[in-house]
Amino acid sequence: MAKHFSRKSSDGFVLVAVLWILGGLALLATIYMIYVVNAATSLQVNNDRIQAEASISAATELAAYYLGAANAEARPTGGAFNFRVGSTDVAVGFRSEAARIDLNSAPKPLLAGLFTVLGASPDAANDYADRIVGWRTAATSEIEDQDKEVTAYRNAGLNYKPRQSPFTSVQELWLVLGLPKDLIAQALPFVTVFNEDAAVNIMEAAPQVVAALPGMTPDRLDAVLKRRSAVPPDVPAVLELLGPVQGATAKGGAATRLAVRVGLADGRQVAAETVILLLENADDPYRVLSWRDDFDG
Image 1 (tube, rainbow, N blue to C red):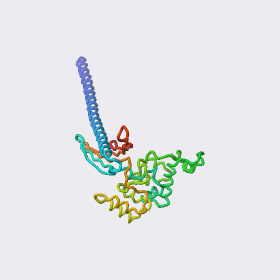
Image 2 (image 1 turned 90 degrees about the vertical axis):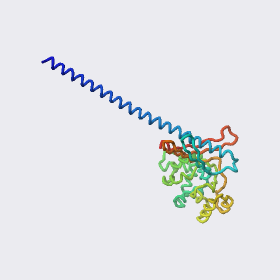
Image 3 (image 1 turned 180 degrees about the horizontal axis):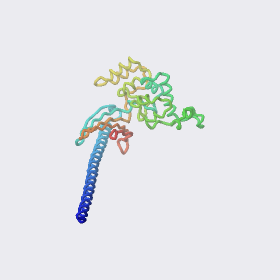
Image 4 (image 1 turned 60 degrees about the horizontal axis):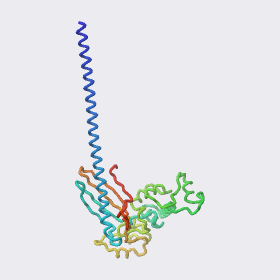
């Protein structure tokens, strides 16, 4: 009787051990399956990233080649083209950076005009323009405490002072004293640090930028926008319509902004924005000034 009880106990122990081993093997199989799935996903994401970057680079190269093939006077200031790389579709739009207001070169009336167009009162717009000019202008006093701009930032309780040198990025607008955040967000699509000219290209500038030009009136704005949309555009006629308006040109700059949209084979869409500078008599035909894409959100 005792031997029979002992044998049953031993059988039960073996059964429990086997169940534990099977459970452990099932857990290991599950972990391995998760690893394989994650690894496959990671490889796909890596593959998408490589294809997207290669497509954006190809778009940049083609745009630089196209623009650099023409001399500066005949170079197009805007346009678009499409191409395909393997299984990837790429759409490219380009526009001269002269279409934007340069934060380092624009006169105060043009900056104030933009803020007015975006909804600020004339007095407030002038104050905002003063703050931008103050940020980019070198101090006139050797004693920091005597500088008005530095004092204004200190009195506002900020732990930094104005750069007092040219803007290095449009994102520095977020640091300028007194500028409303919603107004900055509205202004960013219309400003740059790559134009390096006080004037803006009247043929490529957004309507908000054209409206901001000193001396622009609603009637003149309407006439300019209608005339420049003609095919082919009549540049002399547009310039003639400007009359006393200041700060407009038909020339493009050396910098060009590209809007790139990449359609990957798996259906994913990637958008990118780059700014390139065409170089004359240099080892490289162009330089990338800015690159942003939404691959990682």
